[in-house]
Amino acid sequence: MDSSQPGKPQQKDGLDLRIRLDSRGQFIGLSINEIPVDVPITVESQDCHSKEEQVDASVHAHQSAVMQDGTDNAPKTSQQRSETFLLELLRNSVLTLFAVITLQLLVHSLYLKQDESFMDRYGWWILYLDVSVVALVATLGYLRSYIYVNANHMVGMMIGMTIGMQVGTMIGGVLGATNGFFVGSIVGMTLGSLYGVVTAWCCGPMAVMHGLMAGVMGGTMGAMVVVMMIPDHVLIFMPIFTTVNLLILIWFTYLFYKECVLAERCQVNKPIRLSNMIGITLLTVGFLTALMIIGPKGPMVWKGQKRTAVGDQPTANPFSIKDGSKPGNPDQDMSPGTEMACGAMKIP
Image 1 (cartoon, rainbow, N blue to C red):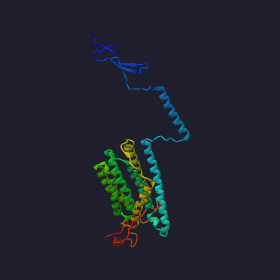
Image 2 (image 1 turned 90 degrees about the horizontal axis):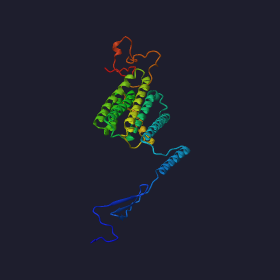
Image 3 (image 1 turned 90 degrees about the vertical axis):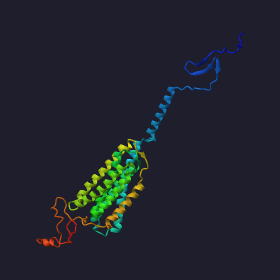
Image 4 (image 1 turned 30 degrees about the vertical axis):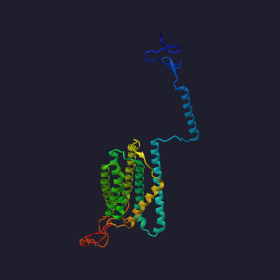
């Protein structure tokens, strides 16, 4: 006796799954053991050619808009943003230097114009101080525009060594010429070590150690070199000395840009603004200028142009007694308390 009922499909052993597709290969139906199953699946057909045509049309419209407006509002890459930072930094440095020199000339014309020896004694050194401080603030500002904690050890050591050395050398050299070897060494060594350590602190102990060593070396050597050059045409030496230091800062900035920025090891933090740069530079230059003028003076400092220019008569021996002695009298020539041509005092 057949127990099967009419109108029902025969039960079979196993599972009979059938999927129906149309001529284009798209899903149209599903049945299990010849029983249709409603599946809420919808597949929309996409025409690849029409999609490509839409993309081409949008690109063509964007190019047409750029050609008409002359500008491209597309998002900039990291390299383009970094180049923009460098250009803005160069522009802000020039504007800052111009603002500082203009303010100093205004102060001189209002309060110091009656002192005829002021410009002869401090004019050149204030100018070199302005250039040095603006260059150092610009370099530090560019470093602080990025988070360079992921920089490799070599770049970290270069950061500590370069900042410590250049701050100590450039500031110590200028202060050494106007205030002597002791003041120039103390100020240059202190500022060089401080900025070298603070700048390289996130790069590890080796970078910090390089910052300390460079600050000690740069502060003492910068002051010593300039003081030793005072009797021998220091005004001709200083432009070359300052130019070489500026080149070191420029190539250090390029090294940081290549090894950290282009390699995408550093994230953008916050670029230094023009107002902040001018404010920091004015405070630094104001403090160092006041120390330069009213600070203690050493035995060998710049007191104005006492020597002839290159090409004229040879410069006299700067360590000979300037006046108050008679030729041929060695006892009186070696008398204590007499000023030499270089500005030093003869001490017994």
